Image (cartoon, rainbow, N blue to C red):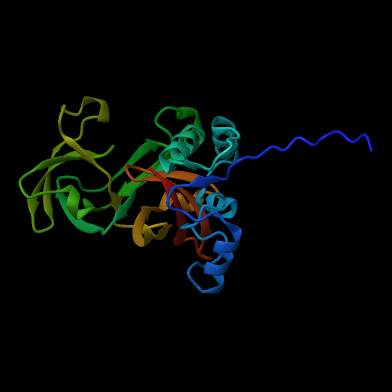
Length: 247
């Protein structure tokens, strides 16, 4: 009949390491109750990536970078994280978020209010104010050790004395902190509760109350922890649910 022989093009499947992307496999797992939905953070679906705060441009860049291949190709999560970080880093406001909070009282700190930039490289984004009362702050237990000196970021250099007590050593600006002193994050006594949901599980933490001024769906950077997307707030905005993206 004069038809030209058709050209057959075969390409492999694009996969993420350790994550099932087959729709039939995921659907079967969903039916069996293994996942909470198509946007479960343990999945590699577009819905799941979006809920964790991945930029659509990062996914497009990754696909273009890999390109079509005749065989299956497995993508490293680290590669996707690196591309996504390029988009999130310049736009994400910074906030202190503390896991397993432990209260300490810093002698000599008393009441004070500090101003910290929302982004260290973009002062035009504005500042956030953090109020400390009676020298009481909350830190992560693994960040301090009796007899050791640490820097409460943007606040003060302290020496931890043990039993929830510390004494102030220096309140110089951050740029003048002595080389080699460990910098740790902290939150004031008056903070908000956050639930951080990640592929590895769910954690309860405390965040500075300034976080409540952000809109739902905003992507933030939890200082020294990683990027996250704000999924929801309670009605009074005293607590929030965050979906962890990556470091």
